[in-house]
Image: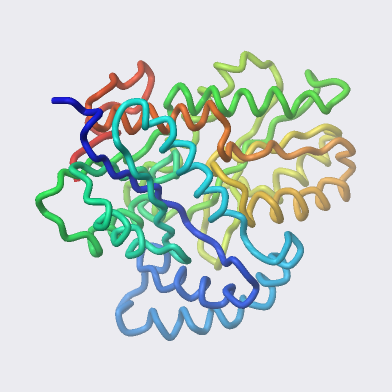
Amino acid sequence: MDNKRKRIGVVLFQLGGPDRLEAVEPFLYNLFCDPDILDLPFGWLARRPLAKWISMRRAKKVAKAYAEIGGGSPIRELTERQAQALERELSAHMDARVVVAMRYWKPFTADAVRALNEYGPEEIVLLPLYPQFSFSTTGSSLKEWQRRFSNAGCPVHTVRSFHDHPKLIEAFVENIHTSLAQFAEPEKVHFVFSAHGLPVSFIERGDPYQQQVEETVQRVMQHGGWNNPHVLCYQSKVGRQQWLEPSLDDTIARLGADGVTSVLVIPISFVSEHIETLHELNIEAREEAEAVGIRNFAVMPALNDSPTFIAALTELVLGALGLAPVPTGATGRERAADSA
């Protein structure tokens, strides 16, 4: 069959973020209404009132952080740039339409479904922009898709994770090399890989996120060929339950106490700039580092629409459609491109 003539729809899933300060509270409400984020006994009764209470309580502090990075999240614009770049690359192989589905703010999954219905694809590829699978991110996005999409006659292929894809690893390595250039003695820089945190209870229930994050870090270090000391830590803890450790805050404090003076923070589970890279890393972590004597501090930019990262997404789509082999070292076909 001539795949050039086939109409292929691709959905890029992402968390989303408030585009203005007035959107912060409803964004938080949508986030905490998600049962994959806030799992409660009798949740169907308590979740909405609790989400309303949490979002009202946190809105002022979170809005202040967004105000300090320009008044809103850049994640929609960056994800749309990724979609446009991916569509251009895919046009060499097929007729493709790439749409964006945000989980907790506009454009929502329902908007993506409407856009694809208007396009009329013959096959669809679902591509969550979370390299490492978690029930709380990729899992939640795919559940929302299943609730919204009803065209049973259209084949759907799902990329569930790509944490070890060679092009993803290469993209991280390129960004690290570029970031190291700003240090006078790059060989003495301590690498701090920072991933979004997750409650330990998720891991105990079989979530593969922690293992996949660790594998990404291992492959990046191997491919980069560095001998720099490195550590993996977790950020963005919310609530009182036990989360994955060590935390970013504790890691920075320990490095300062150990006399480390040069640190490069590498966001390893994020592919786009957003509040957690722009504020939590570039502002909060930087201030903490300065307070403990880390004089040389930098944060690696997110991958965004770097050509190598877009090449990774292109290979993932082609692999899901059976038009290209899954590269050696990438997530196995049975897991990376399952029919949904």
